[in-house]
Length: 217
Ligand code: SF4
Ligand code: SF4
Ligand code: SF4
Image (cartoon, rainbow, N blue to C red):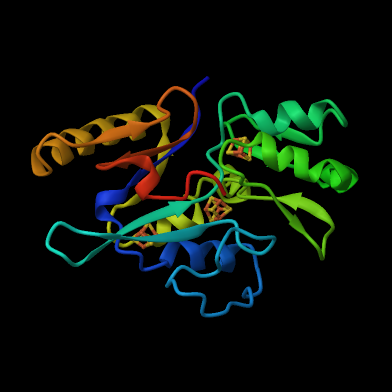
């Protein structure tokens, strides 16, 4: 199926959080209460008011100092969504996929409160969250309202470095391949695109996956 894709070039991300704020702005989400817990990453995880989160991972470098890895995280809009498969066992139609590939949690997920934990566990990245105010399961909806009106997603529009990109499948895959080749040249042959055949959000990384986000969340 053709449709819309994201491409995230982690080598260009400066962790400015423009994408995270733009998402909150478009979705009219209040700020999440945060605390100092030893990381610049805030909030500490996705939540009912945060559909996109810039992860900060800190690692020792060979030069005896620290190095940051930044990773802007949201739903991957899977081609075969495990969340939908799980939800369908209880209420078919609560999670749907639209004509350009956005995986959408409808208001009918209000009836899935008891199944929320199982749906979250079904997602390989533990993305779905529970919104206490609206009492439904929520996550990134690929700005389906903007995209249907011919606009780019709010988060990708805000990215100032070319790290977060959005568009048609062919154009995004072409960009991803060009950036992969450039990364391999720049970083001594390192670089891979994650989950190319399974998701609509393609990530370019140049080191082990576990360095960009906690493996088990
Ligand atoms: S990333 Fe998770 S929440 Fe998003 S479509 Fe895939 S399984 Fe569902
Ligand atoms: S596509 Fe829209 S809803 Fe999804 S993370 Fe970006 S701004 Fe938020
Ligand atoms: S707006 Fe772009 S550079 Fe800034 S945190 Fe998001 S992906 Fe990274």
